[in-house]
Structures are given as C-alpha cells and as structure tokens.
Amino acid sequence: MAKLTPLEHHRRKLRHFFWDLYVLEQTRNLIDLASQMLGEDDLIIDIGANFGSFTQGLINRKKVRAICFEPVEEYYRICLQKFSGNNSIKVENLALSDFKGQSEIWLDSNNLGWNTMIYSKTDKKMVKNIVNSITFDEYASINNLTRVKLIKIDVEGAEFKTLRGMRNFILSAHIKPVIFLEIAWGKSHPFREKEVEEFEFLFANGYQRINYDFESTQDVIFFPVN
Image 1 (cartoon, rainbow, N blue to C red):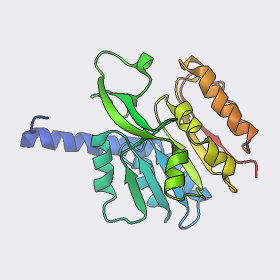
Image 2 (image 1 turned 30 degrees about the vertical axis):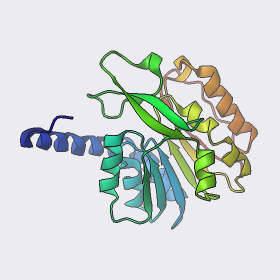
Image 3 (image 1 turned 180 degrees about the vertical axis):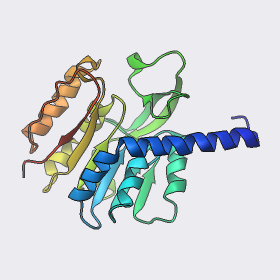
Image 4 (image 1 turned 90 degrees about the horizontal axis):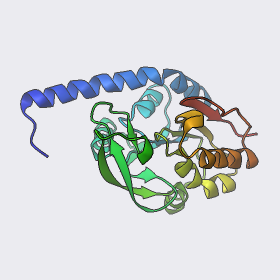
C-alpha cells in the first residue's frame, strides 16, 4: 500500500471521524435499548463491529464487557486503537461464519459500511479481500464463553452464516442472549431460504416469533421466550 501524504492522511482521519459519528447516530435507538437491558459487567458480542461505534456508544452508557469481531484489517485496527487501554473490550480480527477457514469479502471504498460476503450483491468497483473465519460455536468453546447477554449482528447479508455457526451455543445456553440482527435486503436476499431456516431455528429453540417478511433491509430483535 502506498504511503499517504500528510494531506491524504488528514482527509482519511476526517472521513473516519464523520463516519463514526454517522453510525453512532444511526444506531442510537438500539444503543439506548441495549443499555436498558444490560447490567453491570454483562458480556455482549459485537459481530461486524466496523469502527466499533455500537460498542463505544454502549459502554458510554453502561459498564459492560464486549468482544468485537471485525474481519476487515483496516477497521479492526481502528477498533484496536479506539479500545486500547480498556481491558473490558476484546477485539478479534475474524469473521464469524459457519466454518473455520478463509472467506472472501468485497469492500466498497466509498461506503465504509458496505463490506459483504455475498458476491451476487457486489459491483465491479468493490475490491475482494481474504479474511479469516471461525464459527462462534468454536470460538465460544475455546474461550469458555457460557453466558452472553446480547449479540449484535450486522454482517451485510451473511447473517445466515453467522447464525448457523452459533447453533450449538444457542442450544446449550441456559440463559439465551438477546439478538440484535440486521436482515439484509429482506425478501430479495439471494439466500432467502437459508435466512428463513436460521430464523425458524431460533423460534424452535427458545426465541419469541417475530415477523421477518420485510421488503428491504430491516433491523430486528430476537428475544428469548423467558
């Protein structure tokens, strides 16, 4: 990668600053709701952390612990810098998927939040990157995670992969986590049947049924039955 000039570096920092503010504003309602649900020292999982805006907004309101997963190297490093010195926040340079290995992800240089593993939704301007993936089931087992209060998933269409990779954790959890989920593209998702399969799995295993028949991208919340 070519070294940035001081002016280019300054412009990039400004762009990152304003993007962070934008995402924080866009997720303010979810952050407010999450802060009401959580207690001191509860653990949250932020999947598709991007710049860590959701977690930052949340810890500004409540003293919680968090594990942030961000597969894009540049955004991972932004999260590392943002949360440096905070021992309650762990940042992982990983995608959470339905297998362990390497995944392809396409990045949009203009929209810092548009990074997807769904090739059919990409365009020619997007750049392919290779990132490391793991299932949440395996990660939780390795790190002895047994109780998670909230999971936020914003993975631009790969949510069915993420959910499939945490099935065992959901089944074994004595107290199931609340799940904040962005459903990408609604009914027009190219893998709609796989999306529906994972939603129905949640309903069959301890979660309240909700409507997911949206025409476009929508944020939803899966609440445990009890």
